[in-house]
Image 1 (cartoon, rainbow, N blue to C red):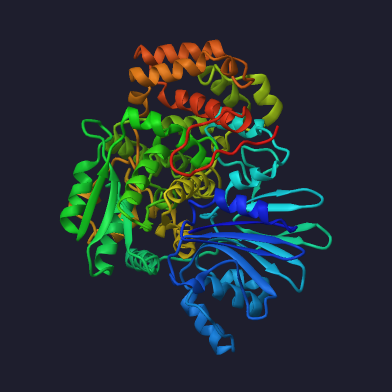
Image 2: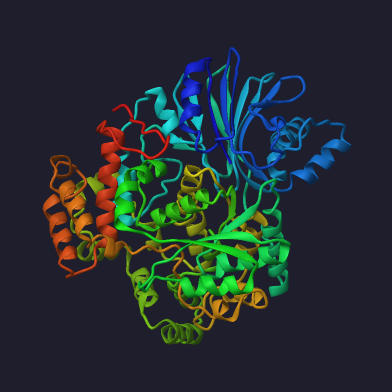
Length: 618
């Protein structure tokens, strides 16, 4: 992966500063291109064609088309073959150069031919256009600032902040985060005036008129999967494509179905030992060591493990906060940060990861709430009763049943119920002022297919991808998620509900497809963890308690408009006295407060290595 930067005027000093901010994303090389109209910057993590031929920004032979590019297009060799047949010539073995010639040959339509993950800016000098794009599902980030005279873009918000732009905390994003646990806010970020390029669109900026337009280029297609064997082959091909690399491939491994399927498939595809990296929590109910080690018995892998400690967390918290650039929910993103730090220490540069598997194949228990509603709406009473009974038998809880009942409540009752039972510490007046009648989109009545689309485009995948990109790039590692191959995603979302949830079981067809790939212990798992972290235990530790107490007793915390500080104090005490579990809620308070101090209170923050702390203008 790489860092890309740019703007629509000439300034060498600013682009050098932006490149410095993104150097963790690309420590192997950096480059600049400047003419009278634009400035482009690039920091490179060399993965394909490690030679100087891969230097960016890169141009065509005549210098009329330039690109600064972050990503991997896995089918670039096939595209290159087509372009060679059409008379194009190449000086490198990179996918970057293929994008340039594909644009020359096909215009804007070239984007539809790509299978991979990317964020790039193409500069068409003859037409006076900057063309910004992300992949189908936004695996790679691309942020921008736009006013009536200029556009600034970057892989990182921090690089845009080097321009001293007019920004402030986005109160709507903050209240959605606090009240509804939402981290994705469409094209908005937690910074006012800094937005994100939509995954399914091109942003086309006219350098002459200073106007921009969006061109939507992607809508998922219907792809029928007839049986488990077709699904298996599609998944294996997705993993195979993501082994295209000129550096060694490894994988994250949580011990769950998804990461285990990736590792066991890699084991079949690669003829050598490869590395896996895992988080373990000895003595905790969240520990997945036995599953991880079981994979180690069945695959030619060398396993590396890390754990979370309070001291390390407190030392790294500020660095992690700036790594993510925006607030995150829970300790799990930090657990992932720790795993990727471990991988960095072992010299890893490319890892496969299981993001997306649960979201496209329905791996979470709460998806049964949507299935129950779907069965009710389609008048399948017997099947509904059967699935509710079998779910309870298998999982020993009633969580989706409660969710189902909540979905059935009239809209005018849902909010008062939520208002009375949850989040009494929220500033309700501010919530209403900035969010109006908008509520958690998961409250709407919908069937399983709609629920899965919601998590794919809004409530789950966007923030999971943000966590992973920021954490991996902090440690100069490229991560590749096979489950988010667009062909696999389109096939998964086209599958009937009964191929995902059936007989009170999750991910039914995918588990069947992987039956001869996975060890017995793994394929029979019913629980779902992932890189979970013991957030509640952390926030009962003596050192963490002091850290938190100092924060909530500070004047800055008490004066924030987002909460009732007295109510917050009660929550802290209740948690520390072990009366009730508020670990996730406490994380949100602390994470948000420290984010506000870092970016808007001009607080000098200690940092690890070279990662810069950047402060926004109010």
